[in-house]
Length: 504
Image (tube, rainbow, N blue to C red; front, side):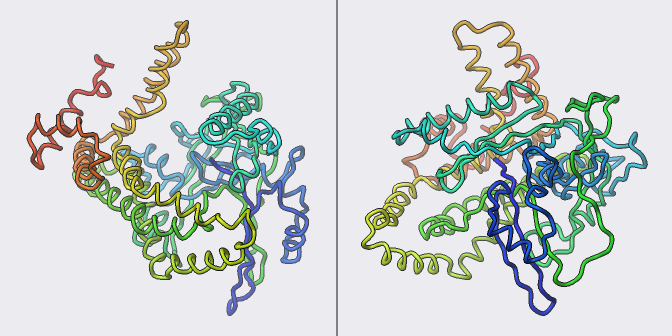
């Protein structure tokens, strides 16, 4: 889920740098915030930042791929985004002989631009405040009933907004912990082509060592172009498509910058846990973060061993390896900094002050005792959850087996009155997903990842939460030895229908 956000930071001088920061939905910017931005140096009017009916800055800012931000910078659909955002597509376009990831690439003309596989960009069409519709339909529901009703409402709104078009998407996003809901509607463009990328030595300078460190001196950019059909509408790839004509694009200045210049970021950030409670901080540093780092460390180790064997394997696993390493580094560093600066202690102090303030206010008095109870109930299962999400699903094969495409096919086949067309569509979707999985799958590393995570799950997760029958069968078949996990992994890889055309 991605939400377009405006954030600002003002650099005042070389000797004294001050960030007057904040994050706002452009729809909810507010006059006070806007006036402050103008005071700091903004020269755009509110309707130039966001307008539902006229071209505005929102029309030049895109969701690139699965969640990165990109910017339209020309009248012919040219897109700037990060090198790490284009990394997977650059790797997919590369071969051992023409290794664009390693050596870089620049299209001399539009005919030399390289079509991207399964890459889309999304343009924000509109944002609609649907808070009243959502909350009115939820009524006084609580618990599972409320969750089910909310999912139904969201699905209906999405369906009504997209009308089944493959070139439309929508999401109903919760803001401010469920106090407000917004409908985001996007136009999807599916013909996106690689225009240029610096070599990896520039685009990923410093690698994982420098990642998440400041200052950082990497040339973290890549260039793509969006295409549309000759009729001006979104279209799948075709040689007859033409460069996208944007409603708005960002002009580029080569004048340079000076101290005191106004700076603003407009894009699609991820989530933030800035307001996490002390209980959440404690859970992160004790269990969540260390478990994630340990599991990703295992996956990276086995992938790295395979990548050393051949240039082709290194290229095949490059994008996945970089993605796993990115947040491996993030959570390792986050834990160190949370402990170094005693964020847990700082949170406890501020919460103590809040509890004193709330003592005579019934609506707030028990807030943190309720938080404490919730975390105490959840804590015994926290490691289990991480080991499922980062461990079991960390295997590409096991993740594929758990995908919605397979689940949807199974449900379709079991549905009463199902039509042949429905079955064929579900089969086609699942088969396409399988082909994408096979293209990226490296059996050598996955063999070891499956074995590794099964061993770690058995050794680390509370025995009362273990699938006892599964491990009993594994050990009775292969012996209760370290080799048992690898033997079982070989059995799975050798017998799954995922790799067999006949079984599939």
